[in-house]
Amino acid sequence: MNEEHYGFNFNEGICQPADDEIVRVVYTHPNREGRLYDYCKAHGIVCYLPLKRVWKPMAQSHGGKVYQYPKEVLRPMFPNYMFVRMAAEQRTLLFSSNAVIRILRDTEQNQARLLNEIRIVHQIETIAMTEEVSFNAEVQEGSRFLVESGPWQGIYGWLKKKKKTFVWQVELECVNTIVQATIDPSKCKMIPA
Image 1 (cartoon, rainbow, N blue to C red):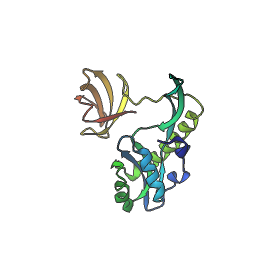
Image 2 (cartoon, rainbow, N blue to C red; image 1 turned 135 degrees about the vertical axis):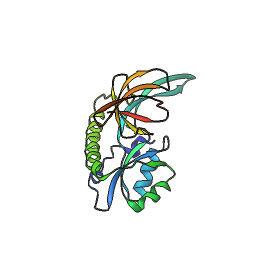
Image 3 (cartoon, rainbow, N blue to C red; image 1 turned 90 degrees about the horizontal axis):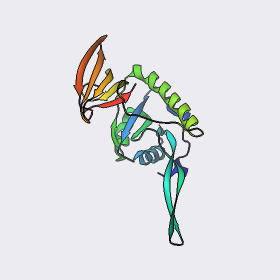
Image 4 (cartoon, rainbow, N blue to C red; image 1 turned 90 degrees about the vertical axis):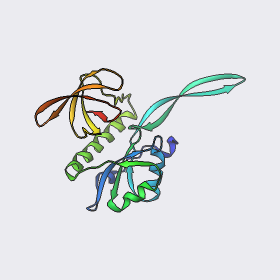
């Protein structure tokens, strides 16, 4: 990703969809966020790729000696994800970019919440450009999470214990009742709530 090319790219239009448009979260192939960003810009699709600063180790040789130094670069805040404002007929156009795996489903009730979260992400991005901000998407024992995909999609829970790498014991919240289950996190995507 060419950092100078993407820069700080927030477009207020992402939070102001027209009547026939909806804002969606798009899941991309690994390291294709930049390709999709360019594609959307070229086709007049409003998108938002939140960025964060990271330090990348660089190497340079001089006089036969290799010197290493850190270089500040911009990377996607949420790898493989970006926000796109689109009309229903632009769905096929996005998939023809060869960068999109899927467009996450949303309902109109969640649209207002998503737009608010985009504003919050933009605030975090603004702060992260000048201050050190830590990003940790891993669900820790004892933390609350939302199951984003798989058979438990849309259900909140608490991670009780990581028994093995691929089996977690969890408590899921459904209809004001706690359901205990063992979940294979390789079959579900869980994000901290």
